[in-house]
Amino acid sequence: MSFPSAVKKQSRLFSQSGGNGDSSTELRFISDLGRSLLFTVHPKKVASRVADAIQHGVQAEVCAFMAELENIGVVSCSFDEKGEMDPRSFEKSKFEKWLELLPPQVGHKQEDPAEFLLSGKTHKLEYVSPLHINGEIKGAIVVGFSKKQDFNDAKGSLIDAATQMAAMSVNLSSHYEAAINNSINRAKEEHRRFTEAVLDALPVSLYVVDRDFRIVTWNRHREIGSKGIPRESAIGRNVFNVLARYPEGRVKQEFERAFRTGKIERIEQQTAADDGSMQHWMVSKVPMKDPESGEVTHVITVGEDVTARVAAIHAVGRAEKLAAVGRLAAGVVHEINNPLATIAACAEALEQRVEEGVFEGLDAIDDLNEYLGLIKSEAFRCKSITTGLLDFSRIRTGNRHPLDCGEVIRSSANLVSHQKRGEKIDIEIEIADDLALLNADGGQIQQAVIALCTNAIDAMPKGGTLTMRAATHSNRVAIEIEDTGVGIPQEDLSKIFEPFFTTKEVGEGTGLGLAVCYGIITDHGGRLSVRSNVGKGTTFTILLPITAQVP
Image (cartoon, rainbow, N blue to C red; front, side):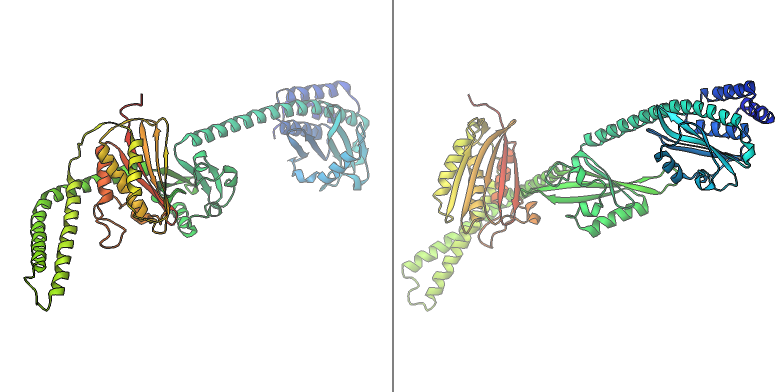
């Protein structure tokens, strides 16, 4: 480290005088040293300048500076005639022991090598001058001389004077350094908080892992919801341990691929909520590269809830499919009904002739009666299917007027209770007091509610509870039909509103009931949704827009 030439000049003058007490030279040395330290604001630079100046000034073999400063820590350096030395030459353990043993308050010389604080040199004498900072000894300047006669009282006085100046300067610079560090730390903390606030404000779930698969960032949206995990339970932990509910092999492959290729990858995922509803996610793996090396250091995982978007796409597809089936049904139902009516009429006519005895004495009379019964019953079953198709394809304008759906639910519950479709079925009704009015066709809404209730009862062959609810939510009325039945498998949930899809046994259902319900609710500007847990039950929710308020 270069040192101001004025101080080096005074050092040479002091040395040439033999260090025998030339006070004017000594004062000039101290004055020049003071000026050189005036604008030195870093403790390390103060230590280096003082140690270098003293080593030159007193022609010592070595000079070392060591101090323990509050908020800064240890500051140390050593100089010999060749320049700055390895700081390890200072025996730190001896120095710390020296501090613990209440060292002398003034400079003193040591001639016993066993007590020397400096190692790696051949000096015969050490002069130790303590650094007094705020009334306490916080360190020392140690000067080693090759020969004992190279040291005298004048040099000791010079070292003590320089030590006092160094103590003041290093104390001031340490406060300045601490203030700068505090300011930087505050700025870093504010930046960290701002970054966290930005990440928490994003409407996505986000977390970041490093190359050791340790989580370093975990935003607020990753904490909330049924699948959320608290931030303190995630930061610093292995991502595979935190996300233990997910298949580790698949998750590990995704991260390894991102680290290896450095390419953004988008993955669609589905999760089931505790209430049985499905959530759809678009998960993006975004590699973060070091700007200098280009190496992927972290991977950002962003999870966006696209459930509403997927539901909208499915609704559009379902509507298109229903419209296509409706057009097909409208075109063929009448053509099918005519031959079905003829078949049924012929079967009934033959049954009547059998009853009149026209075929009496025929050996196969019993078979004839059985076959005619089958023909008639199957013809009427086909007729019920075509009637359902016709109902499904029909445009439902109906007679719409202000409607209290609470009354619809009560009358539907009364009708369902008399159907005797299931045993040990308890029906519960929960209707809010502030239920709003709807502009709807009461008969059609009741048809949809009864169809849902009938399905619910069929899903509880061993008995259970059927709950019918109605409440106002924002600008809609919500009607819920909940059962405690067998539930619907997740793979079937997206198909249950499609025409002819049914989970019932062959001959027990046409697969048109829910499709008709969906059509009725859609025609009223509403929405029909479902959530289900296998073995726990199913809930259908009807949302209908409010057009009139209760007086």
